[in-house]
Image (cartoon, rainbow, N blue to C red; front, side, top):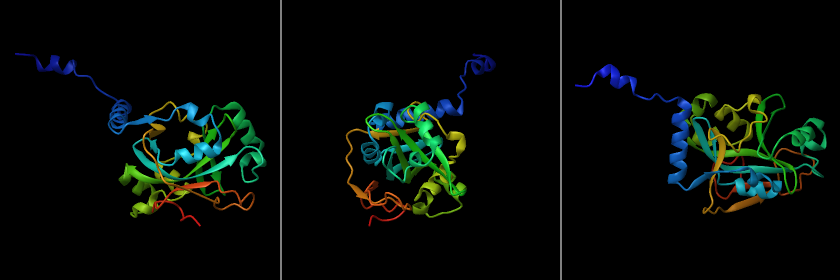
Amino acid sequence: MANPSNAKSHCRSFTKRQVFEAYVKTATSLTKKQLVRRPFFQRDPLTCARELIGTELIWGDCSGVVVEVEAYAAIDDEAAHTFTRPSARSFIERNKAGAAYVYFNYGVHWMLNVLVKGEANGFVLIRAIEPRRGVELMKRRRGVEDLRQLCSGPGKLTQALGISDRHHEMDLCVDPLQCFVSDAEATFDIVADKRVGISRSAHLPWRFTLRGSPFVSRAPR
């Protein structure tokens, strides 16, 4: 008869990270989703913004489908940080495409952006996601029960996901715990609209939403 103590000694223990990575690998293979790699972000802000709609943002134990974004160009866009902030321009210089650009907006909310650096430089602001996984955790962080209110705005989603300045400059193209995944075969009906909450370069239709989604911050005008 086998010695139970010996059997126990041969059992392999797994860290929470290893278990989660295995989950992500299995989940993405079953749904045909693949991690969005750096070449995706080595194009231009408008193309990247449009094509991020429908991808899934994975953040630790939580995730959600991207339903609203805004594009910001590094040149000739007065609403972009690069127009007035040297720190934003230096961020582009020292980071690779796909890096997280996280800033504190009006001293109230953290905002998650992704660096686009290639055919044209700039950022994509993640404005809203449709919650998929880790909903109860997101509800606790937000203090709300309405699923549509959990992540229907850039400040709401960073609070729900636990995103802050500690994630600034994080590479979102390599870690399955903080990344985007996509299904190359999926297609989405996308609406272009004017960006929200800006006064300069406000005429540009650089906000993109998933048509008919009840999870966006506001319906297209």
